[in-house]
Length: 260
Ligand code: CAA
Image 1: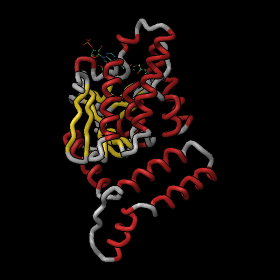
Image 2: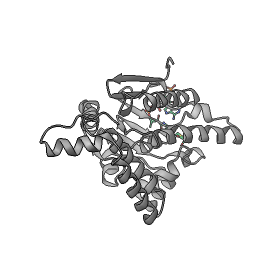
Image 3: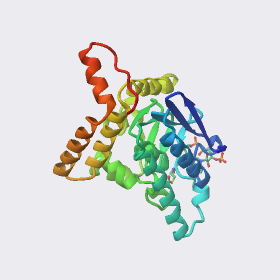
Image 4: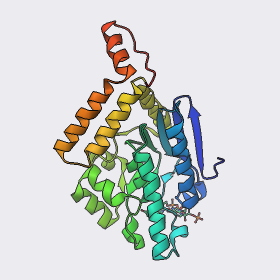
């Protein structure tokens, strides 16, 4: 597929997806969401790709939200469908069987903050700005923000951010746990690739099961979550990579993982 609103690259095991609508600060319209969905599907199904990095082109914006010009005259039915599309695309990122890193290079507002939140974790530049300003436009966060923000930063902080529509800077986002790290803008992509490289040194199936255990476990009670962890822990022992990882350790050599 040829993309007009995103840039999708693959460098061996690491894929990168840049939202690319600089004229609208990378705001998300329907076409952009559909292109993201397609690229995520490629990243999911390409056996060579092990990690996906999501960022925005330019120095100003990661994503400045859903496209307000597109949404201005939507009917309630169309508005619901647009929200459902964003939710579905972001959920496909969240449930992708490979880690996804958000490299937040600037404004991450509304749908941009929501896109960052559906990734496994977020690395930001000092100039990044986060917020859910939707109530200032007469709507609520509609691409998962009312659900993921409280899960990440707690209900009280999420309510404060969403009700006030206030923007916060990268340091405040770091303080409340919305981002993992703040790194200089010039190093953001290299640093994200370094993290991705660290991940792909390990057994791909184990990383996949760890993501599944965390994501599914967070949605259920602790006893069921422990059962899930035990099941997935057991499943690891059916993989070649578990045998290889432990044998390599005992033989004092580097493991040679195959993803099997
Ligand atoms: N949708 C459509 N266009 C947008 C946009 C958006 N979310 N954000 C910025 N743009 C456009 C602007 O309209 C402007 O276009 P023109 O040059 O044609 O006028 C261009 O991008 C540059 O933006 P600004 O001139 O506003 O740039 P700035 O530096 O003065 O301000 C900003 C930057 C503070 C991010 C400001 O653009 C802004 O507040 N944007 C909107 C942020 C927002 O409210 N996001 C939430 C959207 S609702 C949502 O996301 C719902 C949901 O949950 C699904």
